[in-house]
Length: 195
Image (cartoon, rainbow, N blue to C red; front, side, top):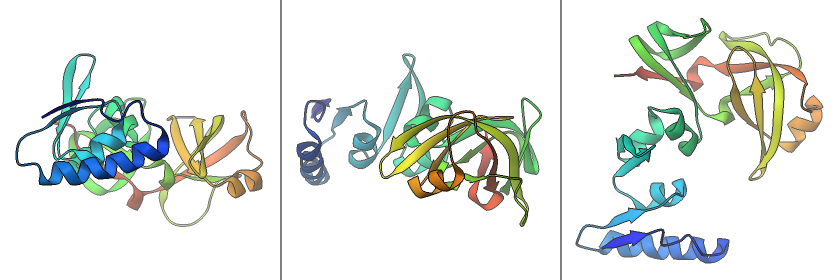
């Protein structure tokens, strides 16, 4: 069966109901199905195996769990909602191309990726104290609604996205140009080989 953008023209509620019904049908369907979609949620919910095409070539393939845990390009990381950086691993430290170092609980040697979710990013008005973690100064560049939270974009030694609650945004008095400190615990990062 070939399905080309089967949910593209549906309103949000019908899309949700149709996606659930389509999932039930595909689970029971004995033959192979090729589903083409630009919607990451449709792909993650409906597919057993994903093939991601960027710029006309395959950049990553595998099951949804593998791709969401270990994206291999910025495009794939954006699709699955992660911050992704490439560098050189030496144990628990990964030195990025600009010299900035991120620490992870995973140990890697050689070319490596480091990924973490926007929800793992904590924002502080001053340099945080406490447990060892990745911290750096940043400047807020953008705020947008993202579901029930806000997606905040920050620039600094590395550019990251952070998801925060509206209450946290009000408490921090967030606005573009605001200087903050970013913190990401090493336990919230994943480091893995680039090859």
